[in-house]
Image 1: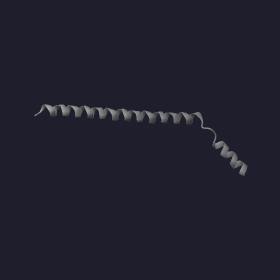
Image 2: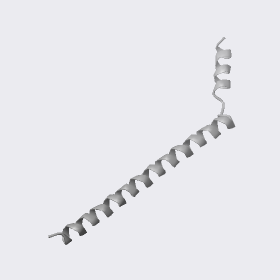
Image 3: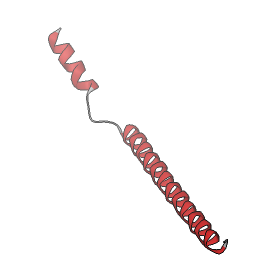
Image 4: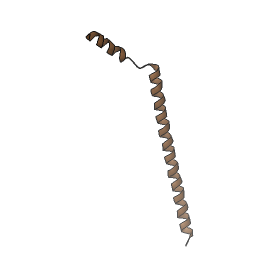
Length: 64
């Protein structure tokens, strides 16, 4: 009985199959893609805000 349980444990915990590796790789790539997209969007909005601040400063210096 104990030997059977040990054998089942070894069978269940073999190295992951290629399908699992592909799935993990896909989700890893998806997470990295989403993180890079959010980083680019964040930088874009920071740049846009900086441009707007520059325009506001330029306009306020013209208006008496």
